[in-house]
Length: 257
Image (cartoon, rainbow, N blue to C red):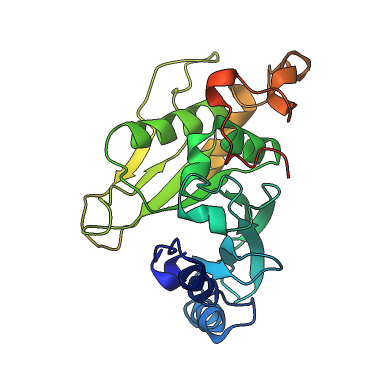
């Protein structure tokens, strides 16, 4: 929700109503300006905003291609229902779309902030064909949460690029992992390698990272992770909406719509 600076939603009814009025539609000039910039610079852009939506606003990301065209809208699925995001309408699914990158396409998905706390988010995007996952973020990222992203990239053989609010709002530490954790040694699971491409500090900045799509695709075609050897029939609890471990049974959970 960069459009509002992730401004907190007040608890009182009048304050919440004013907060919800900051939501914008998809044809708002604020978004149109990004489309124009993408076209002028021939640069794909991901931006986030409080989207006007029936019932309640959504925490939404828009991916715009280098031609200024909308490629993908994604509304945050794992809203922080224990906090201010209980005022939002959660998204329903994780979508993947092809992004034009001059002479080729890369399949891109998005997960927003708390989505990355759930392994299912990146897994669902991988199953949708994502080669690159973009993660706009607004929470402390140093330490375990960055390691968490490393794991998501590792287990799904998917590149993950995260951008986080800098200090003083949060602590920065934006990162890029390329999803390739083994060198080719003539057989799967060869010599380990570091998949970290970029690790930013806590201040504002412009950071450039290069991803080798050809190498990633070759890696995904030979290695054993991702969807190659999964056993979906054994994961029945993962798709159950009713079964809740008692300690995790929370009255504010929106597990079932």
